[in-house]
Length: 418
Image (cartoon, rainbow, N blue to C red; front, side):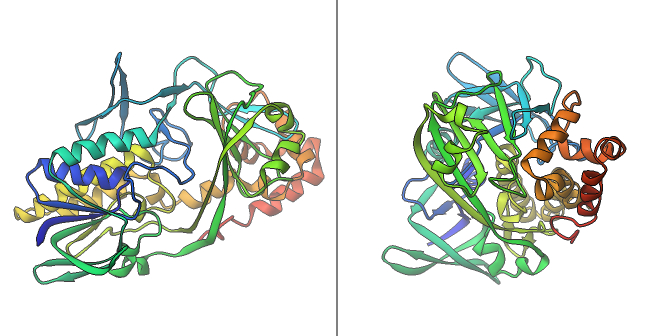
């Protein structure tokens, strides 16, 4: 059987692509390696943001505006630019504050503290389940426990090689959408990986889901701890989860080591570990051209790390619309490439150098030096790394030795400014 469209990957982007295509009358098959489509076992903060969250141009990874409309039983996620709305029936918890915290508990607010949410925790599995049910009703065929290993453009469409629990096979379709995650086999198999540079290999870490984290800060706060004695290059992020649970992620330390660390002992002394999660990936430059022949790349498959939830579903939606325009003789692929390059901050030329600046002090400071810096700038609002970089004269006056260390470290990017 030949399909109009084969979608590889059953995450939010792939599900949105399949749903959009099926509603538009296409014969669609979706391939997913997991047994259950909506299972969410990978480490994920599960945040939907509605306000700018960084000092990058556009302020967000996915830069188009989205809004959240909360009803008594149903929540609606609106994409204001592309004009679609998605229903959601799970828990939704507002994030009112974002605090960067030093080992000794000194805090710098990323935003001015207020009662207006900058984002929300949502349940990814519930969200994906809703998309799955709607796609199934629209006629999408799902092949689970099926891995899309490679794709090949043909004169009449595309051929995808698959691996299942019973063996190998091929699926033919007019078009394919590669939405199989940041290490996309499909995108790489058709040569798109050659566009990309690897900035960091096998970057990974652990995340712990626990019940009973007692935060010393106001509820509704995302906490980003900088604790070099536990991990460098990244922050340890504590976020909200379903019920009374929290997620602690971004590190390589064992659970017992975290509980015993003086930064976390007061908050975790009564906590119960519920689940361990792990993640690993290669950090690569993004795809500049996410289209090759009859294959369109969507979501994280073309990103350095992630497109976030609303960016992923926007990609799925836009990829289908691009394919339909091409079939009607329009330049849908050109439009999709322009949209991709203009809608995600990681396509900006200075993206990696700016991200690297966030973490200079993480890489070179001791716990005591981080405490010093956070105490020095505790009245400032913003991202600590950028606050420090913009006020090095203050650091020089108060701690010349630390100033020289930071200045030297700032000359080298975390990713060698590739």
